[in-house]
Image (tube, rainbow, N blue to C red; front, side):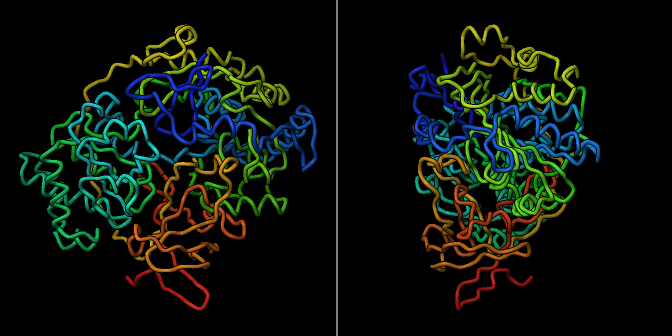
Amino acid sequence: MVIACTRDCYDTCIFDEKYRPLKLFPVNGFTCAKGNADLKRNKLNRITSAYVEGREVEVQEALKYLSKVVKESLKRGSERILHLDYDGNQGLLTWYYPARLWNAIGASSTDYSICSAEGHEAIRLHYGSSFGATPEELKEARAVVIWASSMSTSFIHGWYLVREKPKAVVDVWVNDAMRRADLKILVRPGSDAFLAIGVLREVLARVGGFNELRDYVERFDRAEIEEATGLPWESVKALSDFYLDHKPITVIGFGLGRTLNGGHAVSLISLIPGVLGMERGFFYSNSKGWGIDFDYLRGLHISHPSRVVGMAEVGYRASEFDLVFSWNCNPIHSLPGSDRIAEAVKEGKLFLAVHGPFWDETAKLANVVIPSPTFLEKHDVVYSYWHDYLVYNEPLFKPLGMNEVDFTHEMAMSLGISDHPLLSEDPWKVVERAIRGTGVSLEELRREKVVKVRTRRERPEFKVEPLPHRLEKPRGYALVFVSDPRFLNSQFREVHGTGKPVVLNAEVEGEGKIRTEFGEVWVLFVKDSRVPKHVLVMSKSSLMDLQGKPINSIIGPRAGQYGGTPMLNHQPVELVLPGVYQKAREDS
């Protein structure tokens, strides 16, 4: 028996039946604080019964009630139903398969853009794929540049491989990885694209060829780059020299894609190893390189959503829906403008149904709640977006609630569509077909439990174009969300409690407000020497304000132009303190 941690995390730890990490160096062998707390968390804050309008009921009654609401909504148009899902659990049957039900009825879907979509698309344009360095290649790297990644706390097995190597860290505040770096580059939020251009200027001055790229980067003079980044040219040159001297692998964090110029930044950063002649000289996410057919899992080969809504826009378009069904995510916690969703539900304008294991913000608000098992309680197939092992996950405990496959089939029967080709196909046959491109069979996976993917890795195609037409210069204060080693977004508050909405900054102390054109929230400002001026740092685990309002209610619907990723990490804000007003948006 093996169990894989299914969270939205690079490491995807793999455990034996006694919940001890397997010795699969270089990708396993120890686990993080979250992994250590999972057995305890599994017993806390669980949804143990179904609920309809706050009343405890049997699961079948809740399904019948939900089915009735779905049928009524379908009469007004399938596009009035939206299914919301994301990567709370990375199992193929847990995350992807249930979309078949909603695609079969033509419901609306999101674009799955909130996390890594921006960078995937930006890198693909230059390399044909976002597939980068493997764990073995990271282990053999001479050095590493960690760009916008809290690698030492949120990617611990990757950090273990590079911790003794020469390291340059680029970030907007002095996080743990930067504290341990040989070269520290503290860049202004939203200006990473300008820094990458500066590095390319210096590198191309010593590397032949790439005339088109050389012409492009030379349009930006030193003064412009220094002004945008807040860095002296000596820092730009130091990072350039690090690249030229060490030929490092560049680890690019997902958070970069959520910033101003984020897609452009990832695009330009990924060009640096390319001009240095490094094959797969970057790492972003390898999930699209294993050969897993995620579209087949969701049934997109047969049925498509009636419309696709950007995750940046869902909260701002809540009035367009009659029913939202949520699983494997906590949208009230994570989506921009999520207070608009909450208000619509409370006012009876929007029906919200949740299928999940824990009482999070979204479940507490829902009209219908149906309990589901955790990853410790069900069979599934799990992949990683870093290492190349597939895992046949087996239950450690008796399941609480109805798993996603059973829910999908029960709802299909209740809606009278169980004979639809997407829903009549055996779920394990779906998985078997979806993993065919990995070179691993389901039979082998069930027998061996953990199997390396055998995808053929083509030499990446490298091309310089396209290049950004226009870059915006950052202005004013930027609110930046960072990871906490004890939490994964809203997960693990059952174990560690709900912390206050602390905003680390360089200037002010005490309770006050953060205000944008979209609203305001009450927070606790705390001075911290690690944070530069004009930067506000907040943990992603504390995304409710002092009055219980989602912090993301002040985040607007703006999205990146590559993958549509919400611009969560660069929201120009104003600070308002009792008796003090600080204008945080600089005059243009």
